[in-house]
Image 1: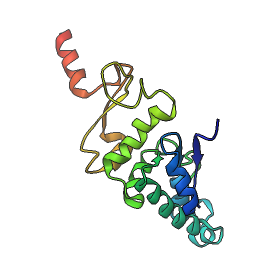
Image 2: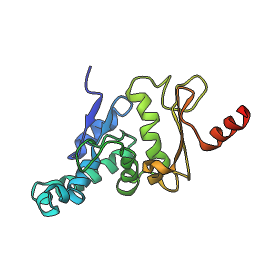
Image 3: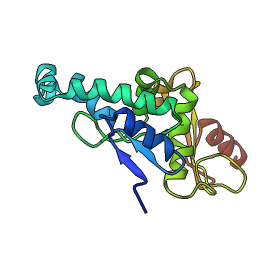
Image 4: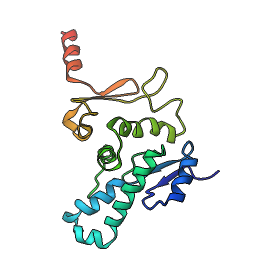
Length: 187
């Protein structure tokens, strides 16, 4: 059977990269990049200074992870978000932040980062013929955002910029224009 998903994968040598590349159509890597970044730069309010994080080895792991994951991406290995969210310094509902990290630190384009969470998401759930793309016959939850995420991925983390959410073909957060039109038809 083998392994289909590798978490973290911060310390990967050339032999491991070659093995991952040889199996790139079967395996996925979810690095947990956000927790590394947060430990180094955002955990001081929770008692972990940058110096402490460095003493614990987080700078070494961050540097190794950025290098390894960038190489994986260049080799076509499927790297997808998985940032160990749910800690005080990496709160839930910030997973889109991984996409920003993928672009800024790993060499992804914004579209590659978005595909890492959509297309690869369907594939990792073994539902590539049902999920992961916007296509006739596929299940797709959609976000309508105020702005272009290809120009600024951070809008995906800003609740004020999420104008509408469609799940299973129905709005769970309706755009204001649709609500206004519905009100106008009712009158």
